[in-house]
Image (cartoon, rainbow, N blue to C red):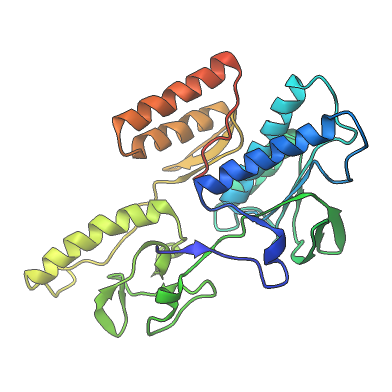
Length: 308
């Protein structure tokens, strides 16, 4: 793979659930549903923090997970005959000064306002320095939480880190304008594995929208090289077309910047789902997913929505 999940440090890794695969998402949903059942069952009171979820990492994945977990708790609360002894808490923890800091600050502002409306607590400038089976230490505050999720970004795999040349803090290899290693023009490094600093927009983020443009471009560049093209005109550098970004904020809302058009709320969520359907491989997947969303709307059944 071009990237792997950035794991917690050795003092933290035993206390966090990963969120990298579909199985991880299903395990998290199962754990939260089980915690709700335990909290609302007759008998001795459950341990403190049983319905507190600490999500570490304020990137797009962390934001989407926080919104979905809050929506899941809302769904369970509306359908439960008993109230838990403590209110559910969803806490999104980010070590820097804003959410999704590689995107326009507009995304941070909309995300924080929407998450607040969902009941999510956002803690910025709060690096996690310690964790245990009972909770996490975020900044100077100890948060007692039974469920702890790690969504703090991605990093390059060992193969990419072993490539010659310079690498960034996440291990991504620095490449030139043709997406090749500076001293090895025969080696292309794409997607999350490489980082190219575009003179117009700066370093390109490790996102799918970048990778899906780089793949076809490299195919064309290889054809040009095989035909002997060497000049700037015959072999132009890679240039990213910024199609924008969209981040889900729960089943009813999202935030988007689509080619300069800013959207929020249900309209952005409709765009988000349209993009997901467009990039699905088969018609069958599109039909099944669309039907699932329709059932969710008409029957009130809430799934643990898709994450980009």
